[in-house]
Length: 414
Image 1 (cartoon, helix red, strand yellow):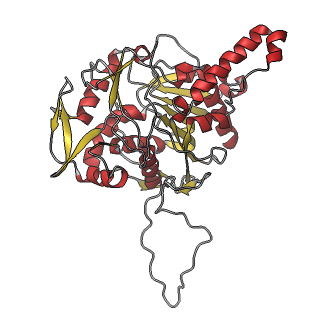
Image 2 (tube, helix red, strand yellow):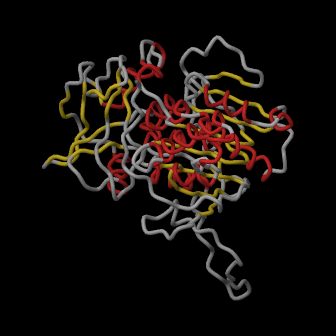
Image 3 (cartoon, helix red, strand yellow):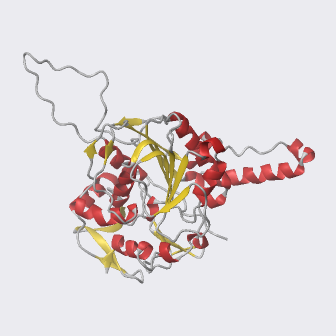
């Protein structure tokens, strides 16, 4: 038996793993496949990033966990030609790439080392393997599991995992340790020279934590079985991931030297807050934290995906390494998909009834798009997903803070 992290790693990304041998679209669908409105909104965000960065000669779009490439292709299709010809789109996926070729789209198993533009991770972090613990009278114990899904208690978690639990999941009999997701996200944000990184996923906060590890097979929820035949997924602690990336991008400053008679201390005009990262649970709407930037060294190993590197390296690292960097400070917003898509123009306004008479086909098309918008922004479904947005050199003030709601995981197929 192995811990859940090792079992998920093998079941999802091993030689016979789910993402190497299965068509995920057969088992579940995401916002990308619910409507083309989603890709159009992401394309609109990419254009806003482009404008904010002064229209760089090369504008990157990175689709993490790209699957069949539908999001990257949809974004490219939605861009005006004068923008598209400057875009280098990268689809990051461990599964075999589709046979079709799309101009301007590059397939790879890991993201570019340096990114100027937009990184979009749609339902990616939920598949980064993690460990599960059970709290016993003798303290937390790792849960071990075999390929049939049978579990038993194992050893005590590592000190770094215990620290994560104390900070981010202090209550409940069973918990899922999100430290590997923190490491994967921090490594990804560390590649962002300028622009925005977005993680869109079903998420929970410190106030709504609950065990969520589950599986999808043939469009149906099923018991999590790490045998490679189903998708294994768990909600993401986006608050923890945000804090980890902020901490890595703004390491603690060295202690200040005490003032001397001929060298008096003075307060700077503006001081970054390195003690409070991410949006606090009681943050007022519109809260944006802005801290320093960094590149986490050694967070990724050559020849592997971010998820695989995080799973392999986080235990040895004992945390997320980081070094100081002169990059633009990192800004953070946590919001919901509903709020983010509305800020990007996905409003779902129903067409006027007069259009039904003047142009029935246009009316039906508009009505269908309004229905698709309703699905994407439903606060009890896809609209309740969390969006973690972290940026360098791009203002996020147009995206108000909102906490994700506990939702079902993927949309069911069929």
